Image (cartoon, rainbow, N blue to C red):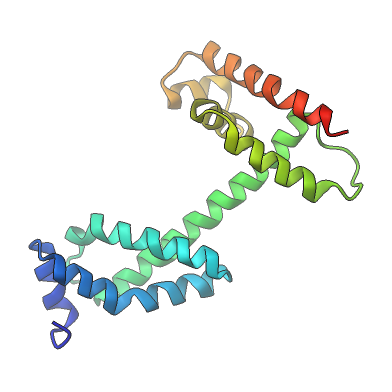
Length: 178
């Protein structure tokens, strides 16, 4: 299979040949990982992104039309995945900053900022998914309760209750750290 060019292997993979798909991944994985590493500057992030790209390839391989080289198409997927990864990370950072204010953690810098950031990230991770999603939309993305309710498919009052519940769950923990 290694003697065939990418176009032949892609066609076989699209036709359902799992060995062909495995050959594509094997042939291009180092390029995928290397580009992700260069774009993120982090091996750990590159590992995650390369894994995501492999899953995306499995989903989108049928969309490849051969108008560009396969490697060019794959690189565009890696680039977009890295861009999305940075956006999510940036949104999460903004969210934790805002949540810090909501939970009463923000104070003048006193050397505890890194500790507080770690605490917030772990506190967010422990929230029930519906609370976490609500907090991300309202505090992280700065949506109104009404906008978040539309996205979540719940009543605006439910979003208001969830934000109250988030504050209630996080505030006692924040106060106990002082």
